[in-house]
Image (cartoon, rainbow, N blue to C red):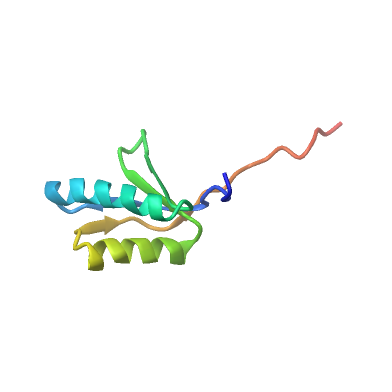
Length: 91
Protein backbone atom coordinates (compact mmCIF):
# COMPACT_ATOMS: atom_id res chain seq x y z
CA UNK A 1 0.00 0.00 0.00
CA UNK A 2 1.25 3.49 -0.86
CA UNK A 3 -0.28 5.03 2.25
CA UNK A 4 0.58 4.73 5.91
CA UNK A 5 -2.15 2.98 7.87
CA UNK A 6 -4.70 5.50 9.22
CA UNK A 7 -3.95 6.52 12.81
CA UNK A 8 -6.98 8.66 13.73
CA UNK A 9 -10.45 7.22 14.10
CA UNK A 10 -13.93 8.04 15.33
CA UNK A 11 -17.19 6.14 15.50
CA UNK A 12 -19.93 7.16 13.07
CA UNK A 13 -23.55 6.15 13.37
CA UNK A 14 -26.48 7.06 11.16
CA UNK A 15 -29.47 8.77 12.79
CA UNK A 16 -31.95 6.49 11.03
CA UNK A 17 -32.23 3.23 9.11
CA UNK A 18 -32.52 5.00 5.77
CA UNK A 19 -29.44 7.09 6.59
CA UNK A 20 -27.63 3.90 7.59
CA UNK A 21 -27.66 2.38 4.09
CA UNK A 22 -26.82 5.78 2.54
CA UNK A 23 -23.91 6.16 5.00
CA UNK A 24 -22.43 2.79 4.08
CA UNK A 25 -22.78 3.42 0.34
CA UNK A 26 -21.24 6.92 0.53
CA UNK A 27 -18.36 5.74 2.74
CA UNK A 28 -17.48 3.01 0.23
CA UNK A 29 -17.62 5.61 -2.57
CA UNK A 30 -15.41 8.03 -0.59
CA UNK A 31 -12.88 5.26 0.18
CA UNK A 32 -12.47 4.66 -3.56
CA UNK A 33 -11.87 8.41 -4.11
CA UNK A 34 -9.54 8.63 -1.08
CA UNK A 35 -7.45 5.48 -0.46
CA UNK A 36 -6.11 6.91 2.83
CA UNK A 37 -9.65 6.67 4.28
CA UNK A 38 -10.78 3.41 5.84
CA UNK A 39 -13.67 2.03 7.86
CA UNK A 40 -14.04 -0.96 10.10
CA UNK A 41 -16.80 -2.55 12.15
CA UNK A 42 -15.70 -2.82 15.78
CA UNK A 43 -16.64 -6.37 16.83
CA UNK A 44 -16.69 -5.47 20.54
CA UNK A 45 -18.95 -2.40 20.36
CA UNK A 46 -20.79 -2.97 17.07
CA UNK A 47 -19.83 0.56 16.01
CA UNK A 48 -18.58 1.61 12.60
CA UNK A 49 -15.14 3.21 12.95
CA UNK A 50 -14.05 5.76 10.39
CA UNK A 51 -10.26 5.91 10.08
CA UNK A 52 -8.16 8.63 8.53
CA UNK A 53 -4.82 10.44 8.48
CA UNK A 54 -5.73 13.07 11.05
CA UNK A 55 -8.45 14.92 12.89
CA UNK A 56 -8.92 17.45 10.06
CA UNK A 57 -9.16 14.64 7.49
CA UNK A 58 -11.99 12.97 9.44
CA UNK A 59 -13.75 16.30 10.06
CA UNK A 60 -13.76 17.02 6.31
CA UNK A 61 -15.16 13.54 5.55
CA UNK A 62 -17.91 13.74 8.20
CA UNK A 63 -18.81 17.31 7.14
CA UNK A 64 -19.17 16.12 3.52
CA UNK A 65 -21.45 13.28 4.64
CA UNK A 66 -23.67 15.68 6.61
CA UNK A 67 -23.69 18.77 4.38
CA UNK A 68 -23.18 17.44 0.83
CA UNK A 69 -24.93 14.08 1.15
CA UNK A 70 -27.54 15.10 3.78
CA UNK A 71 -26.87 12.05 5.98
CA UNK A 72 -27.83 12.40 9.65
CA UNK A 73 -24.81 11.32 11.73
CA UNK A 74 -23.74 10.84 15.31
CA UNK A 75 -19.97 11.17 15.52
CA UNK A 76 -17.91 9.82 18.41
CA UNK A 77 -14.81 11.42 19.90
CA UNK A 78 -11.66 11.50 17.77
CA UNK A 79 -9.10 8.97 18.96
CA UNK A 80 -5.55 8.03 18.05
CA UNK A 81 -4.67 4.40 17.39
CA UNK A 82 -1.44 3.79 19.24
CA UNK A 83 0.72 0.98 17.99
CA UNK A 84 3.19 -0.59 20.36
CA UNK A 85 6.35 -2.06 18.93
CA UNK A 86 9.00 -4.18 20.56
CA UNK A 87 12.38 -2.43 20.29
CA UNK A 88 14.56 -5.31 21.45
CA UNK A 89 15.23 -7.56 24.39
CA UNK A 90 16.53 -6.57 27.79
CA UNK A 91 19.20 -8.71 29.37
